Image (tube, rainbow, N blue to C red; front, side):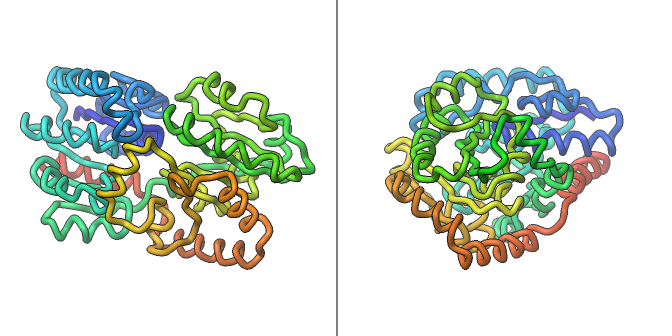
Length: 373
């Protein structure tokens, strides 16, 4: 069968790649055409466009790049029709993928949506679009299944695919990691994860770097993603006393005492690797004020959302200051009671998310559904 897959961000690329690997096991003759990143390309798909040309953050940024977004939508529609897939699999990336869901459905392609848009948080009217355009929702958070069932959407909870990714991650020897990256052996590491999109990194890394002088007994390491140019990080780091590593996020977290993390999938990855963290988020003023009016949830991090309580600190917009970052980081590093409670909550988080196997289960739903047609 022919599968057309669209992922628009680094995390989506990772999850889509794992899904593709499992589909190939169940459908050895599968043919893939995709929008995504290096991980999907490594699975042998024909890549139409790379995520580095697709990821825009926030309302203002989307408006500023509207001509690119519209151009991508037009190109994708034309390419999909030319390919004539048996199934279209959309992975997260709702601003783009919900449009493609309607287009694909209207042309008779079977539509699967893997990793739900956060319609339970804001823009609930989009559920009606999903109900009309998506044949099957494959959700990864426990509470999402009941949410969609209440709206009459055909939905299956498959578990969180991060557990699949982490189950394949080998534990890196600390000495090997330190030597590989020219790091000292005597000082503990604090990881800085400024995001996977250019706009995020430009907005977040500067304020993260400001905490470095307050913690002279620690060494700071920035986690870079391969989809962004090294020059971007180098320009922002300037003369700061910090080390840069690329495409080693899990290795870094395995060896970190704490982390400052931009809101997104990385907050959950950090928690599942048992690293104390502070969640950071800042968008343009326009984007923030629009979102604030629309968002219905108490938290922005997946950790707190799944646990339905404040497990990790969230510093958002005007709260994201040097002083607040220093205070929260000191709590994580020096307060034994805070550390103990956090690790207990992380254990409960792991329990709620279940075991590995989401990618295999999702692939099974897709392939079996197509074979029944």
